[in-house]
Amino acid sequence: MFERQERVAVLLLVGVAIAVIVAHVVLTGLGKQPFARPFTNRSSDGELVVLEGQIDRITLTNSGGYATVSVNNLSIFLPAQVVQALSLQKGDKISVYGIVQTYRGKKEIMVSTAEDVRILLGNSP
Image (cartoon, rainbow, N blue to C red):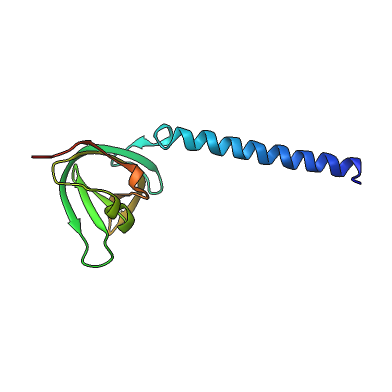
């Protein structure tokens, strides 16, 4: 059926596929926390960072459903699907994981999923 070299090649491919699947499961289980660095003014574009603080301001865009949240005088960009999945209020203490990007000359954090935003302490009356 298969030559010896072909059997070895198939076994190697199966072994690599299993290793990739196991790595994916392990890394997904770990989450972003072990890989994120605390945000600083020296954080570079494309870097995965974490920021914790109190919401100073929430600004919704006129179109598209996007929002910008200000925490510690830093803008956090929330795409529409994240805005719809969260209920944030001014004064909430949050923890955010995201990618640093420069927008109009200022650093901001871009969040990709609602799971990247955790409400640590809500501002409920």
